[in-house]
Image (cartoon, rainbow over all chains, first blue to last red; front, top):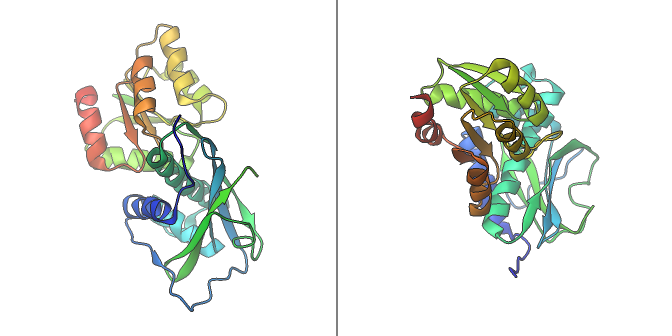
Length: 151
Length: 120
């Protein structure tokens, strides 16, 4: 039997870095300490892993930044994209992050389908996490969380 | 030649199409399918020369699609483009008749390497 531990910050950060560099052709940076990373509202993308480790990975960012992420992936202006396209793109981001993490963890794991929805203020930080950190891109925060257990 | 791209993400279908162009395969016709069931229907009606399919999709997964095709005697060249690329999944894909598995995130070079033998 393979023992799988929760994905740690380094692994998830590496997966996010890989997605940003290969799908957005950009670099994501740590959010500067001391700078307010609170979200008034935003978009939250989650994907579930089940098996030797049960939990979810979540990416939450302001709605405007979600549009910029989608625009970078598709190669078009964020203003030209529908909300459906923006949610679709953010879902693919968390899907590929989840797949990369799953592959690195090994063991018996199944990857769910991504779920993307608007989120209220503080939702990015009010769940108990096994790990979480904040990254920055285009001047806005991206909250990355590892949420243990099933929703 | 004609290529069916099956992925439940419209954005990812666009990215796969763009990557095909970047890899030098932009002169081929592309038919998009939004899930495995849609892809099965379009393979039957469009008779493509290649299927590029996601693995995790609603309605019918990519591996179910491939098994349905092979079960009905359809030998269309088939490759996966998926966020999961573990050795176990690659073996499952190969055993079911897939020619290759390209893991997301991918590069044009990965497409060029995998598809050169199929599309020439």
